[in-house]
Image (cartoon, rainbow, N blue to C red; front, side, top):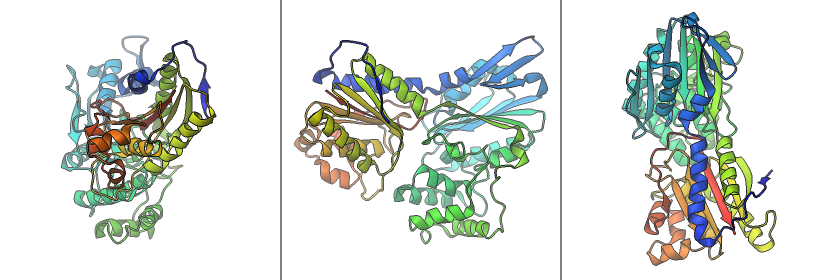
Length: 463
């Protein structure tokens, strides 16, 4: 249900203000979800006495005298600022060693005295650098004892950045399987169900490797509803999916005959009980494992709503759990805009409609784009010629699909402006080629790496 926030200013939004207002609202959402501040809010070091410091992570209290070493591992697009914030709070000298893996271009120079290595690797298709780092993390965790504290930093992209395939599955096999699922339109729940059963680290297996150490995972959620079992493929969480579930995902998308034979063999052997399942709820190994969500899409939408209100809009959060085909979801929300323009219902103008989540794109063409650019283009086509509205759709991580843009902006003039540049919108949408359309009219949203990842933000401004 939508949440309307009262206006706190007499400022009246204008057509000329739509673009800067939309960008300011999106920037507020990203800032609120910044990974470093999120970790700093969740973690506190108490120094009751020099010899007895205690690390508090939300409601969990960890006297450091009870541990010989603090080990830090992790992966995700925002893992670098998470690691830096953790070192700032806990003190770099207290950390024995660590490895975190980030998407290429999302790394940061190490702070002075840092003992956490930052590795860059491929995303969304895993690569050799991620493979190597994953096995180094595996080796580090195998050394953990009951006197160690293992802090795990997970943010969006962790699944692809920690490829540790179960033999005889190779990295190339894992790459092909991931690519086939993405192109078929599998959502993150379905994708991770398969990945967990092909990995030595996912689906609770990272926690199993670290046993009997105390494990605390700090999670920046990029998954609808914030389910612990799905964020980063749940490396520290009991897995409630099975090999049989993974086979059903492949069957749903008609991929059983297309994936590598080694992948199918592992899943079929597991389903027959010939391979051990991922750790399940109730396994004693999880008694010393804790998970804390430090940031989410909901937090980002709340900040966006506050900024929209300050700029003179009624702010309505429609959902933080959007999923489904991007163009279809866009067309549905566009009809709400049309209703507002026609009748003033369900919200009178000026209004900012906000939604978050993660849609998918079934790739039918060979164009260049991403789910947010496709969302914006579908909105433009659905509301072609309608005046005084604007949509901004972008990923909070600063990357939309395999492009250098975070997303795009569209309005009632987008289709006509693109046509004037010889970039017709309808064929572009059908060919999954939204990027050149928005590039031609200078309506790409470009942020660079943002240091966070809490899925996408879609906002419609209507005046």
